[in-house]
Amino acid sequence: MKTSEIRKKVKQLVDVSVVIPTINSEGRIEKITTHIQNYLSRSEFVDRFEIIISAQTSDDNTFDVIKRLKSKNVIPLFIKPRGKGIGIQEGIKASRFEWICIIDDDMSYPIEFMDDCNGLFDDFEIFIGSRYIRKQNTPFLRKIGGLVYRKYAKILFRIKQADVQSGLKLFRKDVFDRIKNPKEPDYLWDTVFLYYANTKKLRIKEIPIEYKYIPNQLKFFKTALKMFRRATSLWFRIVVMKKS
Image (cartoon, rainbow, N blue to C red; front, side, top):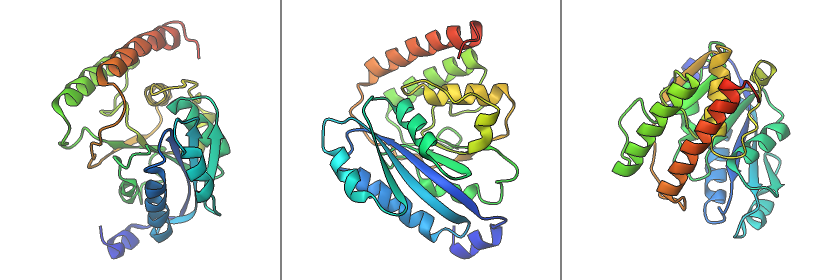
């Protein structure tokens, strides 16, 4: 979208805290941080912003890299426990602004999805960068595994949205005045967040994105089985037993 077209759509300026949960990312974290910083600096509708790099203990030099990135707008967090959910929780605690954007650290999700949120900030409380509204170039096994988990989670947690596990979200910080901030330490944070949001009937908008599949170190089948077991356990605890 051209800058002139974005400007025409601007209805209000927003302040944004971008939280990047990360681990073992010494080779990529500077690139994505710089990309996000450049995008936000040029944005016509972002007034103030900060980028919170929420790094968990790594096996490489991630901590050393994010120390060097510290600046007026870039805040490094050094977190001893591991887990994406832990990184998200600590990043939210450290955030200062009205809107919070959660984005994965591998540049598979486009921060530019915020262009399509512009003009809608008064209408919705949560935006999701959805991989499943338009066709994506994803390996077959990943596609099938994602489909099965997605269907399973939607049934268990009664989630209406297509992408229950998106690594790209933008939401008002005050949603946590109405829903619980999930305490899940791992990848299930995203699913539980949407369960709570749907239960309270928050206004949620899915934004179609072009997802860039990037191979990672996760062992697909081992991770998939763990997520199914964890989802079932969470369903029993949160939905059946009504425990947080």
